[in-house]
Amino acid sequence: MTRIQQGVVLFRMLGAFAVSACAENGALKAVSVEALDDTTTLQQNQTLTALQTRVLVRNSGSRPVYLGPCGPDAQKQIGSHWVTVWTPVCGGGAWSTLGARDSVVIPVQISAFTQRNGYPQLDPRFVPGVFRLVFRVAEAPSPTQSHRAGFRFSTSFVVKGTSP
Image (cartoon, rainbow, N blue to C red; front, side, top):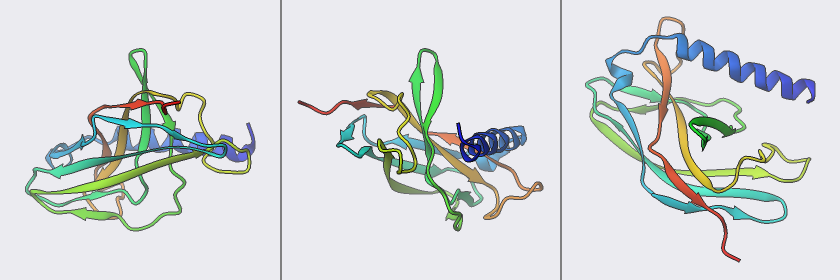
């Protein structure tokens, strides 16, 4: 593993720890993520493996919440555990506002490269199975220590292999 890859792993671990350490309040608990497609097909070619799906993100609370600027992570169910098998490349950006008692349909494209010069690299566990998506949500558009942030998981969906 290169130093950059080690840094990415450490950054993910620290980020997950910092966010999970924050206690949740009603504003974040009011956010739900529903996979709109029960099943999707894994698309593969010589350089890329990808899937497409859609989710409905709903804020049933009385205050706006903010969705993270980077796309969701993808987790696969392996045994009784959820394992992150894909994380987007993110250069930052603005948090999106989801108003009180509002919802939005978000199309999701997840792509990973099979060639060594592409990023993100294909995780060998990114194969057909049961998946869910992980979204970052917060009380404020640029969360600080005084604002709560957390993760919201989509309902699960099945990813099938391509037909021969």
